[in-house]
Image (cartoon, rainbow, N blue to C red):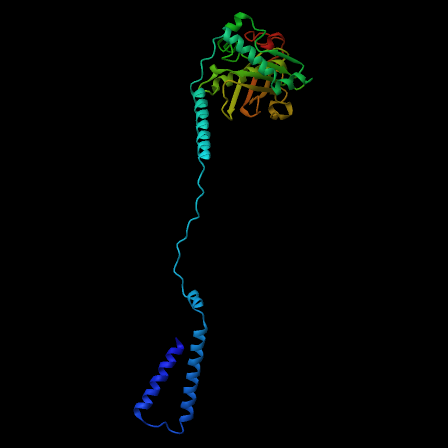
Length: 322
């Protein structure tokens, strides 16, 4: 653009000089001639350069119009893949729906002592024998004693007992419940099958039943610590960590709290007041679902008398295996 403007100025200057028909003064001629020569040389050089530039180069230097981005061609999904995806989602949906239906509306459990119940109990005992925790307890020399729950209770006592009577059979806690005892640490470990009739919310074991079975487990540990003498529950606290699902095996651990872990003011009272820590955990995964803390009082009595309150009586060693 600058060369073109200079060329026009040069033409106008020449036209004015011709129209005036006045000769250029001799003293200005060298300056005018030199100026015209420089303008002409500049014009000719610029023009020659412009002609030498290829058209493609000029076109490339000019701003190009925006080109709309083109999407890459999408690969066509095969028919087999679509069928496979559809079948997979249908199977997942069907399995999820069936599982939800079994939890929300489980089949009715067999009645206690019926042929179906007896057969179910046999199957549960076979399955329990294959559990790693049962194999471990049977092989551990520290656990010197084991028994089935409520085996020492009389038929009359069982009929009046909540767990041994009302909750009997595979539908309750009678499908499988065995206890192992470690006399060195005082720990009791129970493996129990919680049947389909132990629920509150569909498929979930009722919190009250868990409290009852923990209360029994802690009582066994306390009575063993007191050489078979009985007592009563003074305190029972539970912390429900996760849902305990029905129709599964669970492990209940109950252990007296060591003397050194008690508050200073509670030490030296173990003969009549004992603290028990207990947990409920999944027998297959080991996940803890309930944590409990209990205090039992009784035993040998505060003044270490041989006989405590007559209402509590004195339990034999056999009765402590309830």
